[in-house]
Structures are given as C-alpha cells and as structure tokens.
Length: 389
Image (cartoon, rainbow, N blue to C red; front, side, top):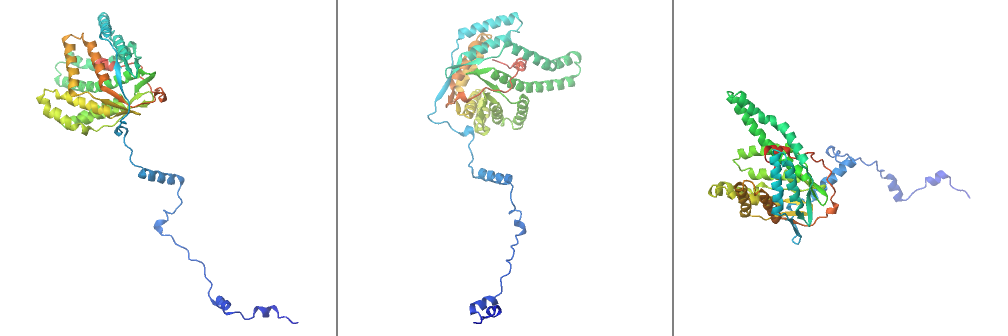
C-alpha cells in the first residue's frame, strides 16, 4: 500500500484553530521599565552600616522619653535610714585642749595633726546602718599641702606689700595690683574649697570602700567666675541657678566606690522663694529670711540627688537652721573659741538627724574606686583660711 510522502503529510489541511494561531502575530519582547531618575538613589543597595543606623533611628523615634534619675520618685514602702552620731563632748573637748596646747608650743604647726585627730574622732563616731566611717588622712599630708600652697600663693601676697613699702607713691599701680589680688584670691577660694572636698572624700571610707571626687578645680573655678558675672548682670536673679549648677558639678563628680551620684535641678523652682526672701523679706527681717531660703535650697538639692537605687531627703526648716547657725556663732565668739568642739558636735548631729536615705542598695556589687587621689591635702584652703574641719 502506497503511503504519502512526508511533504504531503506536512502540507495537509489543518483545522481553524491552528490556522488562527498561525496567523496571529507573535508577541515581541516585553518593554523594559525605566526607573525615574529621582528614585534611583533610593532603590540602591544599602550598606549594613546604613541599615543599622536607620534601625537605630527608628527605635529612638519609637522609644518613649526616659525620665531622669532625679525625676523618679522612691517607692512608698521603701525603707528609710538615718545617720547616727555617738560622739561625747567631754572626749572631743580633751582632744581640742591638747591640740590647743601643742599649737602654742609649736607656733601653730601642730594644727595639721590636731585637725586630723578631730576628724578621725568625728568620722569614727558617725555610723550608717551600724557601720562607722573611717578617716585615713594624716597630718603630714596636710602640712605638705600647706607648704606647697605657701610656695605658690605666697608671692601674690608679698607683691602688694612690696609695692606699698618700696613704691608708696605709685597709687595707680597699687590700686590695679590690689584689684587683681582680690579677684585672684576670690577665684582661688573656689578652687581651694573644691580641692579640700576632694581630699576629704578621698580619705573617707565606709565598709572598706573609699569615696572620691573627680572633676577639675580649674573648671569649677571658671564656672564660679562666669556665674558671678551673670549674677551681677541680672541683679542677683541668677543666684539660684548658679548654686544648683555648682551643686550639680560637685555631686555628679562625687563617688562612692566605683559608682557616682547623680543630680539634676532647675533654679526656676527656687526663684520665687529667692525673690521673696531676699528682695521682700530680707530688709524686713534683717537678713534672717536667708535661713528660710537656704533650708529650702538644701531640701531641694537633697530631693534631686540619687545614688543608684538610693534617694535622699532633708527635712530641716529655716527656723531649725537658724537655731543651729546663730547660737553656734555666738558660742564661739563669747567663749573665745573654747566652745568650738561643742559646735562641731551640734553640726554633725543636726545633719544626722535631718538627712534621710531612702531605699536599699546592694553594696557587695560596688567595687573599690580606682581613680587617682591627691597625694597631699587642702593646703590652699588652709592658707586662705577656708579649710574648716
């Protein structure tokens, strides 16, 4: 049987669907999308650093603002602790009288060792949670500090004296020198007080851990100068702000072990009371309204100070503060200084009675402070007569 050749089979007629499919045009290549010029940079591949930055920025936007440590209030049921002082007037009076005798015999050189003995007594008889404080400073450190201050500040004292003795006719030069000397020593008082606080804290221990103060005395002095200029330019209105700024610098640079204190305050909170006490009631009360303001300032500073999980509270009133300061002054003056040991005890007991620590803190997690401590102590404050105990 004959069969059709292959060409015949391929040319055989097809159905209508096949013919329509053959006649329809075949689709060409898809048109390429052209990205708008302005979006090209946005669609480029981003580096991991860029993606991490965008994620962090988004998290910062979504994260609610965190309150400052000082804005957080202590729990209502938080435990409250007080300092205690167990000193006896007769004991400290004996130390004071021995110091006075040796000061006379040594032409006041023994005062550095005498001051150290009184500090050790006060520190050792002050306790917190049943644990006493310890003072590790020495009279030798105070004496060396005084010699260093004498070598640095002595020429500034001798310069006006020399001008007065050898060139008394140079009145303009003497006036300029005296003005420079007053400004210089005012600034040095601020630096001396800061350095004295640093030394005392670096020699204070509790439960074997040392306190300390960081920061820079020169920066603290510069702040004092700037704030006093602002106080003068604002006719005294900047006073509450300046005090809180200085307390902030002091407290944030104060350490116990390896943890520091925190403080945030607003001088505007104290401004109304300041205006009332100084501008309105000051002349009427012969300045006694100062104690009302000062007590309020101390209460505010204490309430805005934190140390990790601890809060602080000071509850003395202006009248109580006045009853501390005024009798202390009168007792020292009327007894020619013999009552000074009793005045010290009154100050320490007043602080222990009115200062409260709120909260609990795991002291075992605090490590020893490794910051550098001063080798000698508060010689500048002693030279300028602002050292105190």
